[in-house]
Image 1: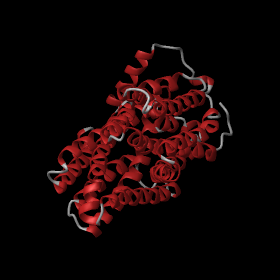
Image 2: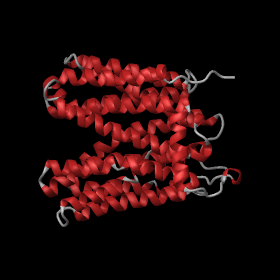
Image 3: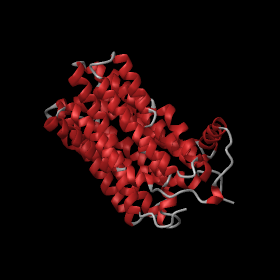
Image 4: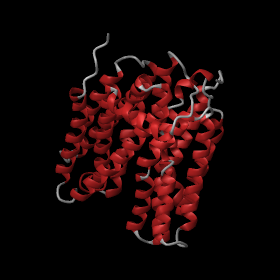
Length: 390
């Protein structure tokens, strides 16, 4: 295993890959609308890119776990993801929309490489006691990407055109390639015989389900992601009815991202202030309270609610990574991280779809339902009990 891979290099690679990922969704939506003139077809492209992660994540993670040089496989996944986005762009207006959606689905299979695929490599970059601080910094890259990606997509679309904005997102992803290629190889001691891929997928699934710490952390994070997706579907109406314009609702996401970044910056300095399991259920409760506060429909409470969402979400993500690093076996770590990322993406999309179907009938009711979903996430820690330490 390479011994001196710098944490800074890892963070630069992770934040650029994830920023490109956060850019690619809005840029694809804008490019699809600009070329087809149909918002429904543009949304279908984005849905295809997102939903495929549920299938691709476990397989990609299992392949990363089998690789002696996982960084090289991660590099290939980034190249194929960027190439797939360019293929989708090339097909827009030239191929039937059904074919282009299939290209988006195929590209989305590799989406977890930009999230969980990176984080699974962190213990070899920052082993031992350094992992706690590195874990908090890694979680911050998600917040930075969530803040910068959509903004860059919008700026690039305004300045260069919607199609060019998608190309720019691919260029940002490409900046991460050198850092991915140089990620440390596995130590000889953990290299294994090549059992069947299907067997490894089954082992990873059983590990997530049967290891109590992983099971409840996964369930809590997935339910919170569904609640977050429901909130996002409410943003246009919240902006229109509470803040004076539908576009103003997007600013609430910036508030949440900034407070999540601030919270994780504090955790990076004092990483062991509280057990990660406590952060997971407490973060769910904070999000539950924030979504209920947003349902009041008044400007100041709404902004406070957005800040509270970030305060719950940011430390919860750091804690989720810490639990997976702690409880996942080395031979299954990549699969568990990418499977978790896939489940969260799918839950987010389903939450947004459910909220989108009912928000027109009752905006406060939809937000209260989202609050209840987050509360269910916190309840997972009462339902799934960890065994007492020996």
